[in-house]
Image (cartoon, rainbow, N blue to C red; front, side, top):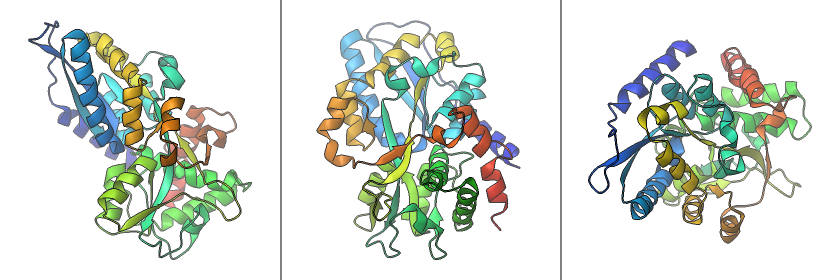
Amino acid sequence: MWAKFLCLLAALYIAAAGAWILSAGVVRDTSGVELLNAACDPTRELWRDVNDTFVKSYYEKHQVRLAIRQSHGGSGSQARAVAEGLPADVITLALWIDTDVVRKAGLLDSGWENRFPNRSLPYVSTIVFVVRKGNPKGIRDWADLARDDVSVITPNPKTSGNGKWSFLGLWGSVVWRGGTEDQAREYVRGVYQRTPVLDAAARGATMTFAQKGLGDVHLTWENEAHLEVQEAGGALEIVYPTRPGDPLPLSVLAEPHVAIVDKNVDRKGTRAVAEAYLQFLYTEPAQELIAKHFHRPTNPRVFARHRDRFPDGDFRRATSLVESGKWDDVQKRFFAEGGEFDQLYARKK
């Protein structure tokens, strides 16, 4: 069932991309270059500002007119769409697993993770809780999500990067504090038992919680939480999951890598522009925009200037959840067909 559903999603993404036209050569001042950025769902506002700034900067330096088109959706769905034909020049997906899907399709060269600074991570993030104003259910920590009176909103890990990070945060909240694998399994199963709907992507889950009014707590990216609260006009608030007696919130370290789609840029002749685009993300102007949108910039100077926006936390790498410490094993264990998520969700009822 999942396989047919995911194939349909990929086909829809490819169809929606339409025909992308790229000039055979670059003519200064009269014709230009077009890039397609296939991005994960909750980065729409970030890329709008980054793209506008980069396009202006690139023209000033090279007198070349540049257009950057965006494709947004659940990170897993985006990865499959690119692997099956969406002609993205760059991918800015939610996590290593999804980016590597494109490599396995033969479109990324090996070693893509080390192509740009900080393991191709211009920013990082984490998973936080959004609750109703005043936090009427008193939700403070991961353990509160196991209560029978708490309904949880989180997107589908099969299609959404937010969904994967939330699943890993749920599982990790048990084992990182010394719990057993069986305890983690039972806890996570109980949470999904109280999840009324699994949206395909992060923004859909935001709408379900904030606009449709479903659920008591929403598990989401830190940046998406801030946007959600701002747009709710005082009806929502953010909680960083913290256990009484612990000095710091505990959550997962979300690592959304960026990458050039090698086969596509070589075919389209856009490699130089695509490289400049992703390198721009590490400049201070772009890092400032990243911080403005509540993503955690990886430039230490910029991060220090915006320190008050980003609470300290005990943010753990998801690869610590498997003995090998490898993302391939995270994927195989938790999200592959028949993995932990499939088994737990099948037992939901």
